[in-house]
Amino acid sequence: MSTTEVATFASGCFWGTEHIFLKHYPIKDDKGILKTSVGYTGGKTEVENPSYGDVCSGATGHAEAVKIEFDPAKVTYAELVEFFYRTHDPTQLNHQGPDRGTQYRSAIFYHSPEQKETAEKVTAEVQEKHIDQRGLKIVTQIVPAGSWYNAEDYHQEYLFKNPFGYQCPTHKLWW
Image 1: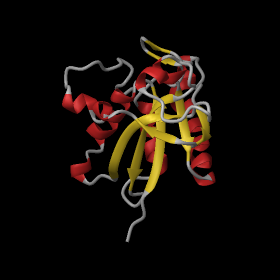
Image 2: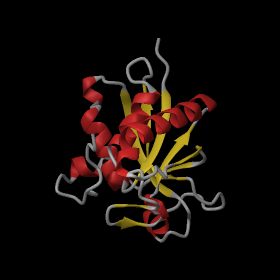
Image 3: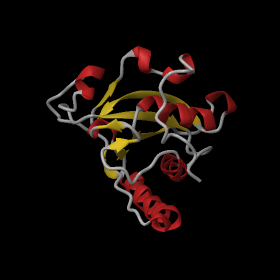
Image 4: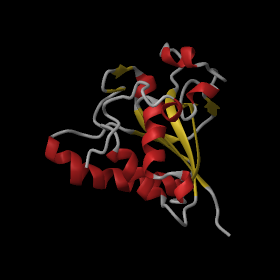
């Protein structure tokens, strides 16, 4: 019997974040990701059930994020954190490519002390192996997961439903 864990990441527009994870860890291929959803998290506690428009205004403090349910016997949390870093530019503060605002920040929302420790360790490794040579620093927030609000239905797996939809140019394999 395997257990299910949850990983929550923000790395710019949530369409591209979800899309690149599912392209490389397709659910049908049984690589460990069991389910994804895009939504909003990390904002003001008094702002509940925000809409896309609310979050895009920047007033809620919420980030566009992806929540990943995964089987740790098939894919480790450390592997998902490393892949998260590999698929965006974690040195950009409060934006990814042309998408600007705190809703597009780079963040890891951890769900346990073990996830926090792993996220910090992987962050240090990625900084040393891939970012130091660029003369930059990772600005990704590593913060406790809080309330989660699913985005509207049309946002879920958006780029699979709309293959020619907007995709942030930073959502690619960087190494």
